[in-house]
Length: 475
Image (cartoon, rainbow, N blue to C red; front, top):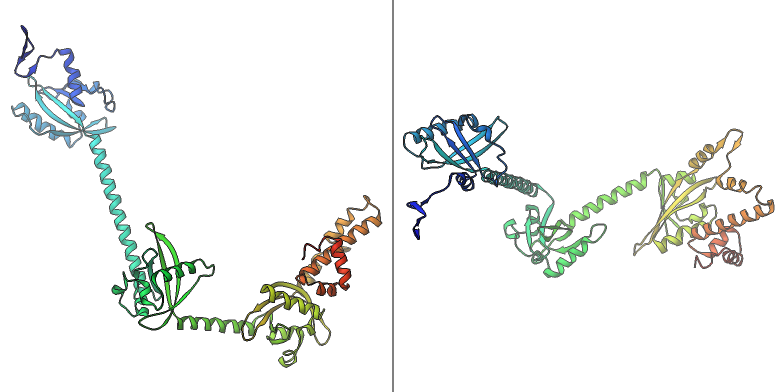
């Protein structure tokens, strides 16, 4: 190719390149270039200016190549260099690992080239560190993937062993489709079908009179119950009454129902066992227990109650009114019977029990209404607190007398700031208001019972309620 009279190409397709530009072209064409003499001495090092990770390698010049190669790379270089000196230029790239003072290593892929300088070789190299890093990342990803597979296989094995050896019948149901994702052998036996046939089938088809949508909604509603809801169904094949206890959870973006299955017989046996335990507690319990009718007639008591009232036999207690044993009689009985029937229970009520000999015992009573359609009753637990009151009194004693209560100390603080008449008037109102509030609260706003408890007429109670602003509060 010529332009006018000037010859641009001297021979073939190789242009003439000025020496001062040759090194920059070689550096741009490779990441690292070495000129190695026939004796294996590095004559020159040229680096790509865009790669800074090599650092400054000028100290390589004038030293053998083997000084900067790892032990396994030295024989590979010597073999390729000997072949080059013998006139056979290596056709395949040569991968060598460089090492500089054992501080760092990096792999480079070299190709040998002749350039006509006393058997010196031009080695053009490509940095393999990006490839090595990518390969390392792939290896790490593969290792992590294998570990994930192993962990999954381990969890799957545990799950299978647990399902196979669990005596509790369990099925997993997809909320979206209503189909059984998995079930164990106990569930298959309860439903009268094999486990393989059970998987993938609709849960509703194994029970009577429920569509898939209705059954799924019933199970989801049961999971919202605070005490663990139940759904009772009859199995199509075994004709058994089966109780399902569902729990909903989310896995893989889908909601799944874990349903525990129990036959109605097993539930009845469990309920019977609980009833036997409750009966044993009633008979042997340390606290006095009794059952009364809604009108306050004693239906049954335990031995602890007989000990508390000093009765020798059940016949001396059963059939009598509980008010006969309460210090305020009918007033206390109304407090124990009315609030439980309205609110379901009354946690604590303090009063005194009186036996036939006139002995008074301080007690705390809690009452619960038992809503039995045939025979409604009220269950009471009576706890003797006379020892506790004695301990509290002893703890409040101080040398030379009794420690004044908190209210007395507050009154003492007023001495000197007001006259005695004003102090007495103010504290009387406070005490009176507290007593009225307590009576109204104990009787659940029964004004008649509260008036009887305080020894007031009903009209006087209304006047005092209005005086202290409690009339509207308790309506």
